[in-house]
Length: 460
Image 1: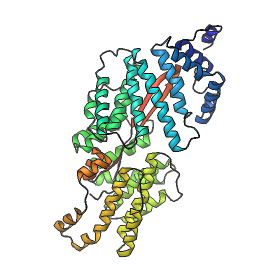
Image 2: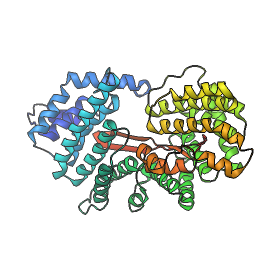
Image 3: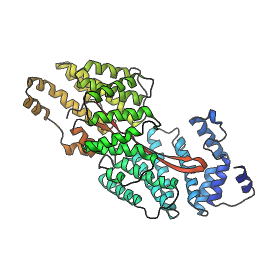
Image 4: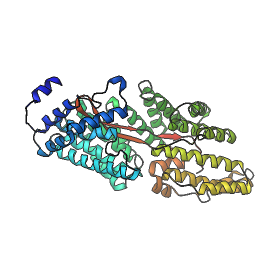
């Protein structure tokens, strides 16, 4: 960087390549300028980057150089996107201090601007059009977290297939990774409506995308009741455990998947044991809640409702703070499952009170709403089932009362989740998509697909 600084001294060149190089010099070629490695933290790095960018008027100079259109090549465009969008995205600079709705709107506006930049840069390399598809997919998830329409699904898949078959994409691996990220992002986004395995099987994804590929393959296989496909995904997921950045999460994912595929005594014992350890451990709420729900579900299935209640009570005893959509879903599931379990242990008026409490709850997503409504129906049928006195035909007939149709389920939670619910499985999807900047201001597009196959009971 010292040599670059000397070369730039006295230079009045304002093309994009020069502007990016000046920005890198001002930032010491770091997203955390001036902060020693041992002291670096997200907060310190965000402050350091913001102050250095403001002092050097980096954003204004980068934007002016971009609009001037001179000096655009793959490296300079990627550097511009990394410095002007990816790092601010990483630190939440565009949304800092805003309430949730305003922050979502600000992020959506910023992503729309970035999408336009990348589309304009596609004349430099088709890979930028692929990066634009990634950003468009992320933009859609921000604006419509409930999921895309059928028309949007079809359009995204068509474009992802175009990315996969790109004939003019001979460049370095970093740029190839943008295309792979776009394919995985689209697959994650549309996995609620279609089987995405064909899209992924034909894609030669880099090892860095091994986890989302394995979990997406597992999700679609399980939704399609394809045991052989799910077992193949289990094998792929197991291979990733040792190199996983979050080994605990991957191990739990694997245990949930194995139990969903084959809910026998062995997989139940493994998942319940793991779930209890996680529920009691000094871990983030997401892992503790998942573990508690898995352990409670297995205990309840064998008839030990009180044990299920105890494990769930331990998770919410201190009123955990939650922020992400997934955390909110898990917290609501814990509260609702406690009402369900207590309602099942109660009778008469007391049970009716639990049903009313369950009916009064709402959100945070359609998936949780549908699961809750199925239990409201089931609790209302318990007395009639008891009156059957063990007659299987009678119990089966009672179980069908009020049951929503497959079409109704699909319209609310999507095809894949509906298919699982019909078979007594409860799945939630979580996709992580982000822009990042690697060494030397190289643009990185990150995506992961994190499904949950919770062992809570589904009374369909």
